[in-house]
Length: 52
Image (cartoon, rainbow, N blue to C red):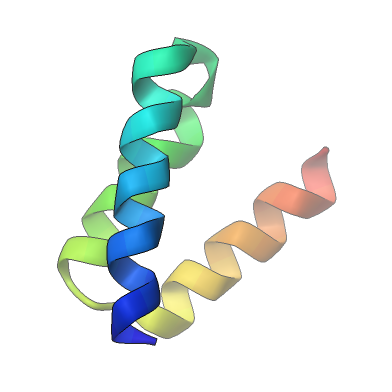
């Protein structure tokens, strides 16, 4: 998944720059990516998707 982590980071940065409404997702996501917390990343995304 490490190759995917850079893609997640890139997309997270893009979302932050595009629309600040994404900040509640992208801020914790960026922190998890920096810590290589793969399982927590998946859980965060799952929870966020359920809220949509």
